[in-house]
Each structure stands twice: as C-alpha cells, then as structure tokens.
Image 1 (cartoon, chains in turn brown, red):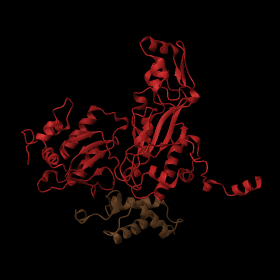
Image 2 (cartoon, one colour):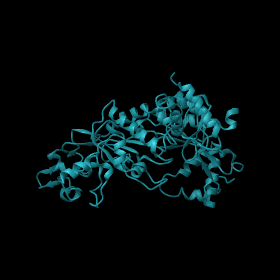
Image 3 (cartoon, each protein chain N blue to C red):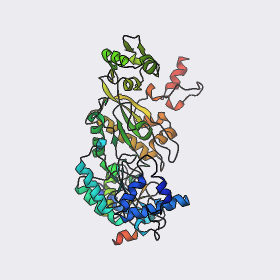
Image 4 (cartoon, one colour):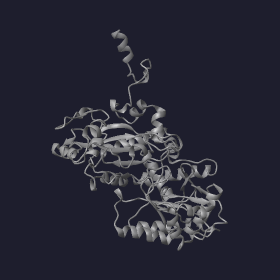
Length: 81
Length: 405
C-alpha cells in the first residue's frame, strides 16, 4: 500500500516533536529522513512537500528563522492562541 | 523618552540639514499621528548617541501557512519603548516592473496606517514593497487585508525570493525578451518555493532585458537572466552622421572605448565586427538613435551571484550563453528544478548556490544539473598546463590513450 501524505506528515511531526529544543530541522533534512524511513519507491520530494504543507496549514508546525529557515513546533503561547 | 522636533533629537535633526530628502523628516511626519513612529525616532536618537543598535531580528513570527514574507524584529529595550517592543517588517510582492495605479498605492498605505507604523520602504533591495514596523498581533489582520486586495507576501528566509524584473518592453526598446512576463510566470510557478522555505539559503531571480542590467542581476541574483542578441547590431548610418554633426566625437567616445575595439569609423561609415562584440552596450548607450540591439534576441542565463553576507561577493557565471526566452519557459524551469535538487541535496546551511558551485567545482556541478560545458563558461584559459582533472575522463579514455601511444 502506498504511503499517503497524511502518514508522512505524521511521521515528520513525530521527528520535530521528539527533537524540539534539541535540534532544528530544515525541510530538506526532514525530506531526507522520510525517504530513508519509507524508501525512494514509496516517498519522494513532492510527497514530503505536500506533507509539510499539511503541517503548516494546520498550524501544528511553524517556520522559524535563526540564520536560516527551520521547521519547529509552535511556541507555547502560539498553541494557546 | 526624547521628544522629536523639540531639540529632543539633535543628532537626527542634523540629518535633515542637507539638500536631499531625509528619512528623518518622513519619520517625524509619521510620528505626528503614529505612536510607533514617535517611539522609533526616540530609539534611533538614542542609538546615535550610544553608537549601538537596539534591534534583534529573526525568530518565530509569520502568518499561518507561510514561512516567508515577515521578518521578526524586536527591541532589546521593550520596557522603555513598549510601543516598538515588536517592529516586524512585512515584505509584500510588488507588481512586476513596479507598475502601480495610484489606487493600489493608496490601498497599501491605508492598510499599513491601520495596522502598522505607516512607514514604508519603496522598494527593498529584492524589489518588494517593504512595510516597516508592526506587532505580532497585527500580522494576520494585515495579511488578510492585503490578500483581500489582491496583494500577497513576498519571500524571506531560506526560500525563493520575490523574482524581480526591469521595466522591460513596457518602457524600454532595448529589452531583448519580455522580462515582465518571465518574472510573473516564475512567481506563479514557484509559489510553494516562495512561501515555504525549503532551501539551504535564499535564491534570487532577476530578469534584465538587456546587458545594461538595470536590476544589477549579475551582482545580486543567484540566477540572472540577461537579455542579449546573437546577430548584428542594427546600424542607421544616417543617424550615426547626425550624432557626429550634433557634436559626438565618434572615434574618441565610441570606437576608442569599445572593449574589444571591434568598431571602425572612417568619417562616413560606421562598421562593427559583430563576431568580436561582447555586448557591453557602450556604443548603443552612446548613440541610441543610431545603434540598436540585433533582431535575433534572447537571453544569457548566469548563476551564482551574491552580495557579501556570510562570505564575500560573487558575480554570476555563464550557464547558458544564449537561449530564446519564450512562454511557457519549460526548459528554463526544468533547469532551475535540477539546480534546486542538487543544491538542496548537497548545499550546507546558509550556502548560496554560487558558493556550492565553487566548492564542488564547475565540472561536477554542470554534470549534476545535466548542462554541457561550453567555452563561454570560462573566465580565462587555465594558467597551469600541468594540472589535469582526471575525474573528467570518461571510463576507458585512459586505455584508449595508452593504445594510441
């Protein structure tokens, strides 16, 4: 069964959550991690891009800028709002 | 807090004394009706006295779903200057070629006076409309009003920055392709790359219609698309004569200043050896009625320029010496995607594509993006004939050479 963008989004979210505050990920880091996890036959860059968009549009993840753009969980006050 | 205009800002007042328009005067005008602008003046005056900036930028601000377009800016003295504790910048995608109606300008200014400091910078170095100074709470309402009026945010951070173009064929007869159409097409095609940062660092497109390069793409754009031609410069001999009669010294001001000395003038007829012309535009700029670019027009695509930030400045290098630039631009866009794929895979954090080219070597880079090397890509012939690049040998080349020996 092919991997869906929703499943990839969930897997990306879990990585970001696990490393929050310890390591910052760029979109390309997460794409590489997903290709490694599911294999090139199942996941490609386009699917990862769609998965990241799901996370951003839902507000579960946000882009941050610290000398480069990274994907992180929203800060606490952002979640509360 | 210092009061602007009542000798409370003596150092800033000095900046109004020259013959030129002053940003201080503009901020003072805005300060009469906006408390953010008023506080900004006071903090700026303090910075001049202390010789230290009181701003930090970056962090976690933006609008829902977008990773670009908002540059977070905070004062390090929030308790003393609460009105400008946040002073975020919004980058708004400008109309291609910077053509506005006066209604559009009023709309942007009205939105910004409602939600921000009222201060703008028209335009930023990437070309965007820059709205200077608002708070985190005002970002979403501002974005909502902008989009309701058909404006969108531009790029910032590690994304494709808002593509920019010179005025092109709209106002310039030297445009060798439709810069406005290409910049618009790139903007629409790469919306995801513009709004959702996924690159190692920023990537800028600039479309210049002719080698005059009015948008300075060769020094600023990661990909410069510079209009050019591959046939002969068009000459109107009557106008050449007219230029001379009007006082132009053609030998001194045109022929002698040609970098390849490919122009001859015998007092009656101007001749150009087009094979040796390097398209510097000097002769055309000097005699605009007499000389015009050729008729077989297209563009040279160059890659890798950048201003000095993390490392030193780079000028862009030729990638495609000549190509026709016509919709739907598929060849160009395919090449861009190949470049982005390789850069995303191999680029280090904050490494521009020009720096990556230097690090991996032009040969490896061209191979990865599937572009054939051509002589136009070289700045000059190699200086050391004893250096060989074995990795460029095809498999079996060595055996063939041995057999020949």
